[in-house]
Image (cartoon, rainbow, N blue to C red):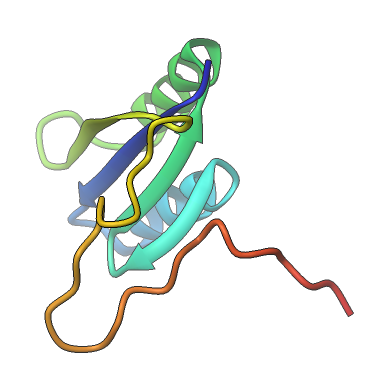
Length: 96
């Protein structure tokens, strides 16, 4: 069963910042600067966290993982926006 995770990061050094972004790009959808929405199985989450743990400096950087519940029970108003509208990441991806 997949769960929705909001993963945010505060990484101090530019190289680690880029590596963190690239890592999370493989696991989820980029929502904002340093914020990703990831739909992960428990095994995926373990692997994602292990990859991030290898990238960040544990004394300087921080990654937060927030469990937003199961993908199946996702409500339409799970994410609300103030300002520019939130684009639903569940929309189909078109590859040209």
